[in-house]
Length: 69
Image (cartoon, rainbow, N blue to C red):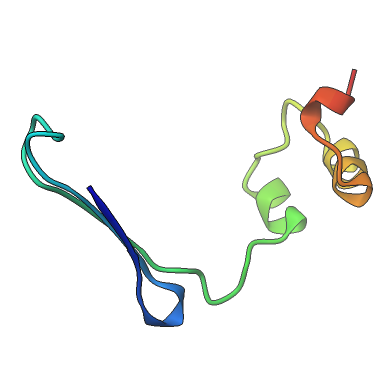
């Protein structure tokens, strides 16, 4: 198993047998040019269970979801 960070924030992760039972696995992660905002996530419907206002308050306080209760 190998993890590597390449230029411009690109990350590569490889898993080879015998750790991977199904053969060689390769994951390449390329960072977004522009990070998603909370408004972007809300537009995609990601705050149906917990309202955006609650998530915004948690982010502001640097709290976790366990702080909701």
